[in-house]
Length: 183
Image 1 (tube, rainbow, N blue to C red):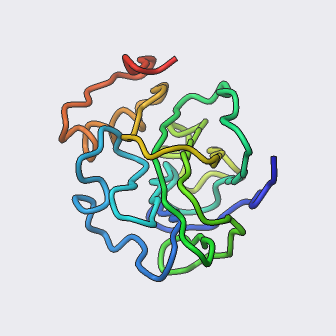
Image 2 (image 1 turned 120 degrees about the horizontal axis):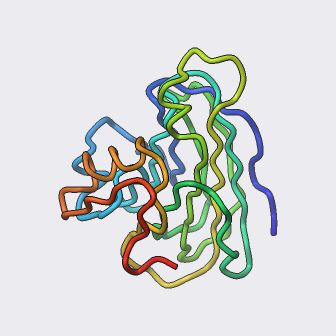
């Protein structure tokens, strides 16, 4: 495993985006979540993975890991998987309006991206809290493209976003639920 990012990212509007090129999240949720089941990791636009962090502003702990093979599931409250095609030139990451940003050395190829989160309810309620209240681990590994997948829903906040932006395809999972195709 190679750790590509491990820091507290500062953001507004809970926006964290991994992208290739300059076309990040533009506020059009319909475009970024079109045809998806999940509602907090948008990957419908080629070359972009948009993560809705629970904490609207402040700092959230984010780590990004590059794996050779699919990693084991962790014990995070909420887990979603999407696919991402990376062409030559690697990736970058940014928060709303480029408040925080950086580069990610990811070779070209097709990847599965697993986003695991803990503390989403505390993050949603703790916009002005002292310290870190929500944590995100983003894992990438080579895999063929596949539909997005809700692996685990443990927070009210994730359930809300799945219903709000992902529920357009009928995802109505409640906290504590596991998707039928999940482990």
